[in-house]
Image (tube, rainbow, N blue to C red; front, side, top):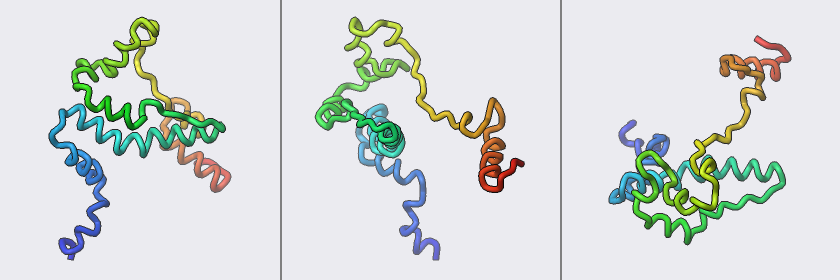
Length: 145
């Protein structure tokens, strides 16, 4: 029975989504393949959702100029070695901005934009799972574990 109905549950495989996108661009360089899959999955399902919610919550309208269709199509034609040199990402963008932005900005390490979940649930360098459970129990039952 399972083999007969396997097609019905194929999409429950979390990797199916990714392999489908990788299969669409088999002939590309590994960097371009990964950028394509990120653009089809991680960007719309994670990053852009967060930007949209954060901006709407603040009454702002966010724009993503690098996502312009014509610009993104052009950038896709740029050779991979110009997009990334070794482990140095955004190579061509940084070269284009050299002289316009100070070096400390161009050489700055990437910093995340994460939500302060630990502060929200009262975790200070503690076990986040336990802190989260305490938070839920306090909200639900008015007491901590």
